[in-house]
Amino acid sequence: MTVPYTLTRVGVLMTADPGNDLESEGVLNPATGHTPDGTLYLLPRLVARGNISRVGLARVEVVDGVPVGVEREGVVLAPDEGWERGKNNAGVEDPRVTFVPSLGLHVMTYVAYGPLGPKPALAVSSDLRDWRRLGPLHFEYQPSLDTDLNLFPNKDTVFFPEPVPGPDGEPSYAMLHRPMWDLGWFREGEGVHLPAGITDDRPGIWVSFVPVSAVEDDIRNLVHLRDHRLVAMSEYPFEELKIGAGPAPLRIPEGWLVIHHGVTGEQPEGFDPTTQKVCYAAGALILDPEDVTRVIARTTEPLMVPETDEEKIGTVGNVVFPTAIEQVNGTHYVFYGMADAAIGVARLDRLT
Image (cartoon, rainbow, N blue to C red; front, top):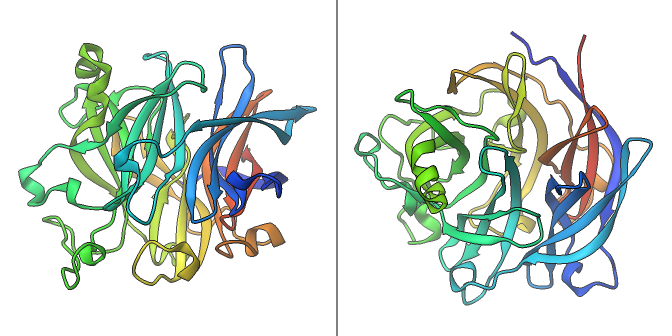
């Protein structure tokens, strides 16, 4: 099976406001969502001086069914909690928002850039404006992995929009994520620690689950993930360094469509993106609807690579980083970060 979809650029949706100190180092990697009245909103990552990130809110301007611009409405999440700040860093970064109808809530996963580097966290909202933190994500200990997933930096976290079958068949909420196994960032010389059964140290896409019954008992259980499984590793040249999930998975006739990013180039140790000489491109996977740990199709070539000036020149050059997908008047649009400095939009079309 092939992936029957294409991405076509529509244009630049948002660039940093030169007069806004909160955006002095760029706007990028947005989440999206619709409010109850149907209005489409962007939740961009706003980067201030010193690489301090916040999550903003901006109404998307739609003309003839096409997203063309935004109207800013302020900040909805900032690194206000102690675990979101270090001595020399702070940030709530790269939000992904999934509306989960069975919960009646928007579920935001984001990266808290705290004392021990990037750690995933979760917040929920009914209106995209007021967010209730449920706290850092917790990965339940799994003896078969012979490690503790909570030790590792983790990014690219995003929930499926509806329950899926868990490994034991129980209806479960599922979240994609991307652990990073090198602990040299924390302790010099510590190096890579791989889970049992994993032989490739490149970051790949994993999935973890929370039983629906546990979340019905208490929404706070959404942060307590279990049954961790590897979904996909790098396979093709445009993914040589690593892959990571992008927008919330989209249900299609074949299964779940996951738009992802693949990375090539050189990536020095640490978390400073400006030291990287890399290229981020967009690809796609289709996951089995009955077993989301199983890839049934994937792109061998990228759907989109950096080509425009906005994608090639910025805080980190040569970056196409898809993070959100929304339907507008029957058409799906993918929203993506451009060179860690601006936000673009592309149309997602199904091949006939």
